[in-house]
Image (tube, rainbow, N blue to C red; front, top):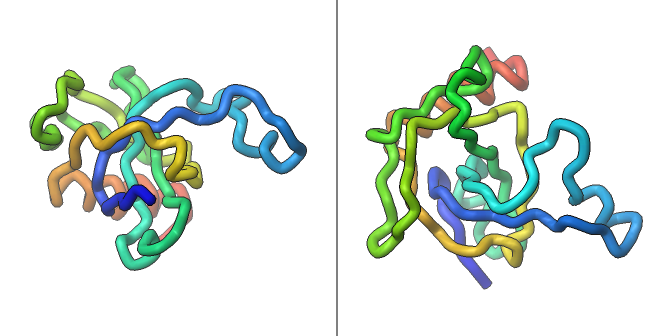
Length: 133
């Protein structure tokens, strides 16, 4: 079983079709992010340990989407995984697009965000979304 880490960036491919009523909840619709894309793990390591799921937020390169709950993430705050050829750009972390990720659908780790950046995502973006003060 794949182990994920808090602040890690993973390429995740959500299901494109549903085979059951329960699986239909996992398929993207409307304004949800779909297709293979980078997700940042925001659930803590102690929560992820031994689980088949983790909580993540998706990233977008459409930086004009940045606002109070969509955190701007400069490419300089991303540490690329050794051997990874994925090209990072300035991005926006869509903190309002929170998803429980099935670890079997994660393709591979492509990097991680700096400690400063993950603090911004959690303390600013997610706190805003959930109204945590």
